[in-house]
Length: 478
Ligand SMILES: [Zn+2]
Image: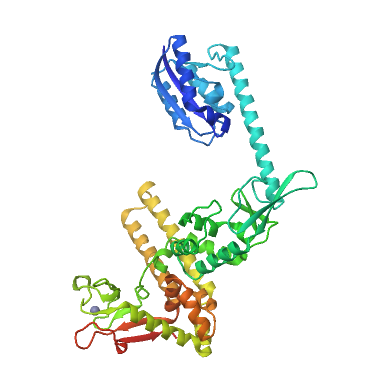
């Protein structure tokens, strides 16, 4: 008889240990005893036989095999390997009956799908399995919900600790072990710093470098990855919010580290995939985000290192530049830094800048516009390519219009600068310098972009690329 072997392990640690290999070995031994020829093996790893929504490719392939008539008997450890859900199981049993396929389990109750009593017993067994799984799931869910509602962190007393908090363990009045989160001052300061930098337009990449450079590690002692940093920035725990099943269910009993408004703002920054191009990512040049312009041809100056020296240079002719203008980066950036700090040192300019600044609401409205346009673009391409509801011409016309709207929104955001950076910058010459020295390149870039519209770099007089103060011309925003 041609037999198919079906094995599955679920998330149950006990079953994990026994593993698929063990099930396979047992199944083959059973087949041998019965004189079956195993012609196919299907397996699902770490998938629940209880949840109906979970796709089990092995199980699906098994059904296909049955439909194609390759299989005469299905072997499994216990019928609950096939399904812990009564509906799924009876459907499967119907299919087997239709194709004259037997189901045999080598463990537990013998399953005889050919007799009415056998099918009844199997169905009852499936219902029992389903009930059992549902009970466990219900218990786990209500326990979690209870914890969530009481504002206690997940995982009772057993879990690790989130970065920024220590877990204090004690024995409660009811004699049970308890744990609560207590702010870890050092790490919490760092978390606040991360949120602040993020609001000022820094990239997750630069934040990650900074954390590692400062000697911080994750709570499991590992260096920070960008993902770990992003996880911190996304964790509502730091805003003192308790989350359950993706929804915020209320305030937590622990102290927050950042305020909820800042937390929400960071979420919208992270949610926006376009921010990478906006903040410029990791760069080594202060003025390459369209600030430095060639005084000879008007093109953007880009990073053009030469003889192992950092230099700004005009693009080559084939890239629409003049290619004939270069300047050492170091002295230019130092001069710009001094100029910007001098400029900011004056209360008058600070006030003028402040007044000039676009309202934050306005900026977020532009972000909103971009998000909506992107969504519409996605829907459009679905309608056109998948559903084929929109003809080609109309599709391209609508796409162009949306892309134009995105461009306009981006320009407006750029024109508004990065609002938060100015409110963060301290007043006073020395404090300003200190801030600048401590800031990463991303932060410095956002400050420069907030006050300077462009820096025109004029070509050298005698054809030498020497640095000379008079070659620079700063155009202020205000
Ligand atoms: Zn040029």
